[in-house]
Length: 210
Ligand code: SF4
Image 1 (cartoon, rainbow, N blue to C red):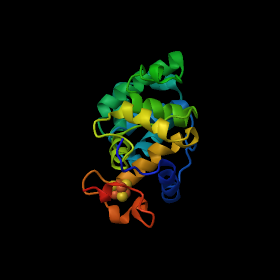
Image 2 (cartoon, protein in one colour; image 1 turned 135 degrees about the horizontal axis):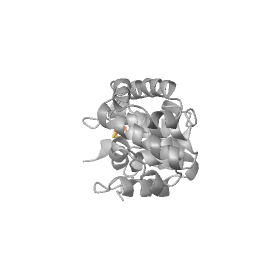
Image 3 (tube, rainbow, N blue to C red; image 1 turned 90 degrees about the vertical axis):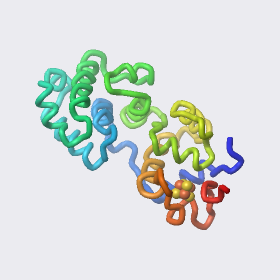
Image 4 (cartoon, rainbow, N blue to C red; image 1 turned 60 degrees about the horizontal axis):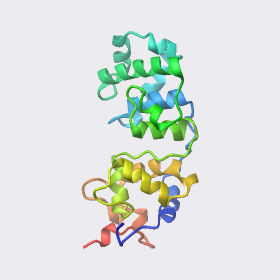
């Protein structure tokens, strides 16, 4: 662990004030799962309207499982990699129709198109099971905050964050760090002078690093 270290609960408290969030706004496990497939490398402003259109035209997983691939591709065109995602969505719908939406990470990652990040999203937002989804923003900012080491991958990062934060805060971590990462703590040249973690109390160690 780095010597310089931002106090995790204080980070969450400050970010909650800046990026308010209702973690239970979209809580149908099937919709959370299918939306997560659509969300890869796609902005929320595109993902959610596209998902809503998909669900309005195919209200059940049976409908989706039986959908013609070209029809799905036409609906999913606004999202990136829509051909691959159309295939994943259809295969995932067939899986869910047969087995239901799993609750464990192991089973969720057996669903076509679902990796560890989406598995954590489905657990947290679909099922209300505490979990932390680690994506590129969470990975990068956890390092800058001194919570993880440079060499830590997604799994190690998730493990460490779960040890650092109380279980009731896990569901907020992804949203808070993704929001911070998109607006301020960008991959290149983070805007530290505008960051809530670098104001009066200045709890982020990154700007002070030599
Ligand atoms: S102070 Fe800078 S490095 Fe630290 S979280 Fe904010 S933007 Fe990122």
